[in-house]
Image (cartoon, rainbow, N blue to C red; front, side):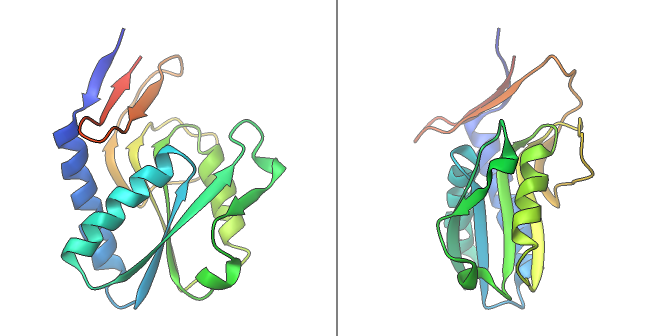
Length: 164
């Protein structure tokens, strides 16, 4: 059984709002790095980047972050070298913040480099965290049971999020 919690139109609206929040936060920077956690987090980062291109003159650099979600200690790789984001503003982006494991290991990775500003963004914040990590920018917050699962589907003309 699927309960739709975000429609395509709602995701588009929340993406635009998050882009405006990022622009407000990083307006004094020349460049912002949008680091999306591989697969859905990176797709969400691309959508935010497209919105930022329409509303601002910020230079946006996309970075894909690869983390083994089952064992995040395995190491993290990024599509751009550390020198590319050193002393710059960075937003770490994922689709759903579940336990916080993926996000906290992502934060740890980027803290090894000096950044001018560091924020996090998620489309859905589940409010069930094992780690003390928060999303600075979030589309929606949901209190769900631990047995429930949230899935985000990004398709060209029909993106949605559902609870199962």
